[in-house]
Image (cartoon, rainbow, N blue to C red; front, side, top):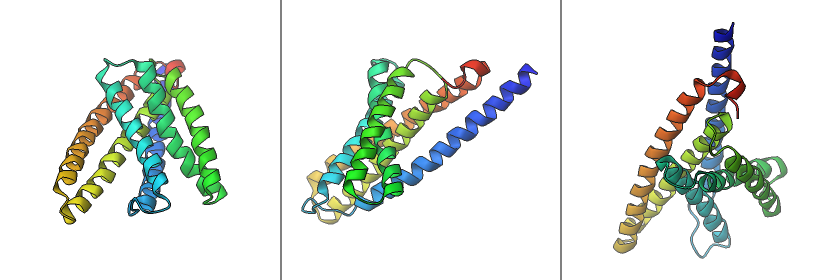
Length: 201
């Protein structure tokens, strides 16, 4: 009976993470493609900087977290707050419309909820910590993708110095993506070995 419940919890645990990953990919793709073609002269350039900042912070934090040598609660807080701010922005925007004020409300809610969860679960290995790590890992890849498009644009316009800098940044975030996803996978594997009472938090 105990083995049955462990398997049942493990299946729900895994399906939940897959659902979160699919939603995150959809949300990040929607946000990134909305702003990827904007130029610094655009009235919406501030949105590019804010979105890019949240993506980069989430990715860097979970990358540092995977090294296990950084303050886990601090990186967990930054990772959770930044990644959930993005999902909050997307979710509230989709529910309430395209108004910037609603996007700010969603970002604020995400910052508070994500930061709290990230700080609280930083030293745990349950579902919440793995979910935040997974979302932030996908943010890391989103950062690499955005930087790569700017790299291509810089090459196309023959701004070689800028292209080199952006290319190096792209490579760095691809490396962070690999580390973060590998760490998230190990955390997921460890979580599956936990008793049902400890698997979620």
